[in-house]
Length: 71
Image (cartoon, rainbow, N blue to C red; front, side, top):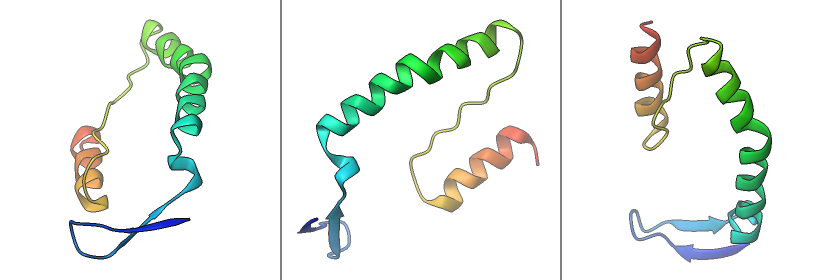
């Protein structure tokens, strides 16, 4: 693991293996091949799929989920 200083808070940022560009490419390829066709199928059959912006804090993302699901 590579440790670098994170300028946002001064703490250490840990670089995970999953952050490697080659691994990200493989994951995106798998998403395109396996997940995207399922999403397209569900949309074409009328199943509602909610898209949520996952950027931000956990509580921010959870708030977006609650709003979208009206809970």
